[in-house]
Length: 195
Length: 386
Figure (cartoon, chains in turn green, purple):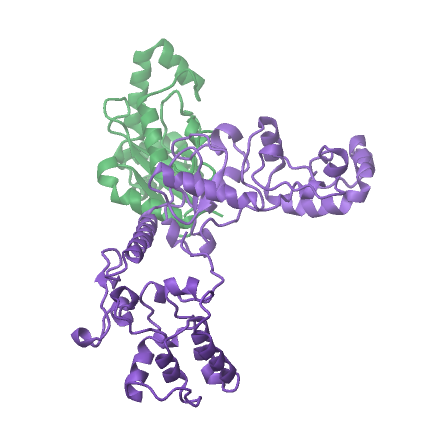
């Protein structure tokens, strides 16, 4: 059973400190505290600057004695984060977890990982290769991905596109229409239906 | 410790210190410290008290008073005063009026009106808080104790004063420590340890190697959590969740410490407590304790036990297999052999199995190999501070 009293405390502490850290954690739904969404700002002075990254958090039953499961839902170009699934390669989320860590400190560690990639212990081999062999291209790609997927206006665009695709529209068309509509899901749907 | 050891004698210690709030209603004997020792030897005054005891058996209400009298020899006048309603006076009358004597009696039975100030008890009302008679009180009012804030220091008994101040200071220190402990939060559940919902949870789990506070249930939970997701038992679970320093045992305590010495005291008294308890694994020489000679518990060899007979511990039984094998063809041969070898001890094993539920086989195995010790066994729930 997840220690919800502790999770509640963590959320309070996190929201109290939001001005300083910029790290936000909110429950995915009213129903349970076991599924949460974390948000971290891209660290200043990195290709991720200016972006806002969403992380899906699932708390295992044994939390806090087991690490929370964290995964980027915002696409990120980073050697230690899968560009496909968003899986994070970070020791404290695995064997170096400690019950004294909290969701906030874990997210802070993820943020620190963004500013200090470890290409020798990669999660995404392609990105790691690029980081080691052609750093300039890596920076360019990472910045482009940040612009495309992690800017405020494009926040959640992936889900919206996914929704439209599920309705039966081709992905490329759904994306372009959504972008034209400024991220407004309903407007894009209207356009798609009329067009 | 908070509690004074229970003393066999029924002598009121408060009265001996000069102030008993119960006065004549006290259940215990009101005897002066100096008299308590000498009362046995002084036999010269015994003729009168023995009379009192005889009469006491006739009338129940007198008995407590009379037996008190017999323990603490009194001046004749006082004795006759207290027992006069039930006894024909053996000596003509008392000095004061009945009312006066009765009133004195109320406040302090068994007190002689000696002229020496150190022999007079101080006013119990003043010592307990405030005396309603104030300035007019016929008794000595004690000096103010700086620690407890009560007028309970006898002005003419320096030894008693010193003793009271010392115990009072100690008590005060304990209270302060408890107050400080109340503020301390567990870093795992993020709650104040001493404000947890159940009494059993309101305890710290002190790590031997570092000074980070946790509640006992949290730290035990962490240390006994099964190493899924690739966590290493030795480097992760045995480590402090905050500083990651390895500790091999956890000490339960109701109070948090402020200095190295205090911690040492807590650890030592905990170990001393365990040393007085027989080890369940050792089982008086019939069982095999995984901690061997470094076990915190007592290993008593009972005559006729395995160790007593063979001078070595009995062979270790195979680690429990879960779920138990159902088909005979998959039971390894050595298990069957073992079963026959210890058929007569089967009952013991079943019993022990239940006890070991909370000690994982891998944990025992590991500790065996490391030759290290832990107190995390089934008997661990002993409180340092009851």
